[in-house]
Structures are given as C-alpha cells and as structure tokens.
Length: 234
Image (cartoon, rainbow, N blue to C red; front, side):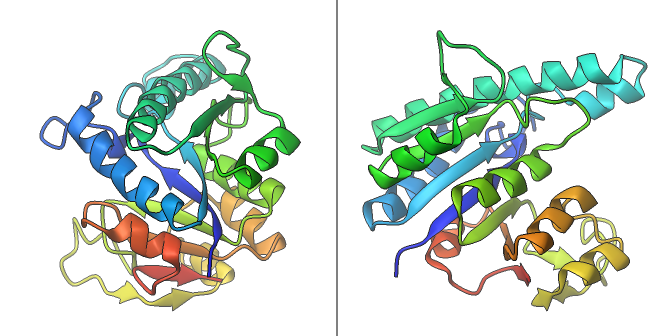
C-alpha cells in the first residue's frame, strides 16, 4: 500500500554529526537515499525542512534580536537546506521540486497548494521551505498545515531519539518510551515533541503523527512504509 506522507526534517538532519551545525553532504545523501528508495516504491513524500543547523530564530530572539526579524532569518536558512536536499534527491534519481512560502523565484517556486499536489500526482517529491511565511510559527506547525493541505495520510517527525518519552531521555536515563499516545495526552503531559499549535492542527484534521529516530539507518523508509517504529500519536 502506498502512502502520501509529510515528513518533518529538522536542521539537525543536515548537520555534520560531530559539529552539530552546518551542512554535511554525506549526511544529506544518506537521508536522500532513503527517501528516494520509498519514492521509487510509489510512496509520495512531501518534506518540510528546518533551519536550525544554520540559524535558530528563537535562540536569536532570546539573545535580544527582534523576534520577527530572527524568524525571517530562520526561514531563509530553511531555503538553503531545501536546495541542498533537492540536489541530493535529484542525484538519487528522485525528481524533486522546492516550494517556498516566501518568494525567491530565482531558486524555487512559490508555495501553491494545487501545484504541490500536482507535483505529487506526477511522481515528484516536494520540499516545502520558508516555514508558513509568517514569523512566530514553527516548522512543526508548517508540517501540520501542509499535511492537511495536501491530504497526507500521516505526519512523520524525525528526531534524535527513538520516539516520545516520559522525560528527556538524554537527561533522564529512566525515561520511558510511549508506543502510542492521544493528541490530548501529548498536550496535557507537556511532552513538547511538537508545539501545541501543530498538535492541535493534527488533532482537528485527524492526522496521525509518527515520531521516530532519524539517526537509525533505514528508519525514514520504515516510517514512510507505515511500519510500527517510534511513537504513534492519534
């Protein structure tokens, strides 16, 4: 069974694993290879990319920069990552289009919902960059919004850990992983795997979310195929 999924890739998915920032071609190529593999199987993949490996808007705002200005800088960082991912996907034989919520017509298409859906129907992968085009919204909210707009079956959230835990497993070794949660569980327990706006949007549109560890080889492909890895929120 083929799926149409919306995959959220944070900036960490593009970074040098040792440095934790920048763009590492080998890391991107391994991500692209898995996406191209499931694309060749007939699954339709739309991606939303973050920009934290280049610039973190929230961190800059916390340091005193104007929040809206910092968020716009973060949106531009996502465009850089989207172009790098498109290049890697095309090298793997996966036809790909980049659409941005902010107009940069020399390098990418503007986001147009029906055009994005047409690309998917034509067998192209689509990367959504530039967030929602508005400050104060995260790329988590972007993936929930775009998933609803394109009629995705599932939202995939790639993280550094195996799923959603009762506490931060990097700080608390006794934290327990959840196999499945409801949307309200995530909000009421304050689990913060995605911001509340994104969780609420998925809940309102009956969009299940699967949270999984991107650092395990093959996990992107498993998640797209609908295998039971990580944590399912529905």
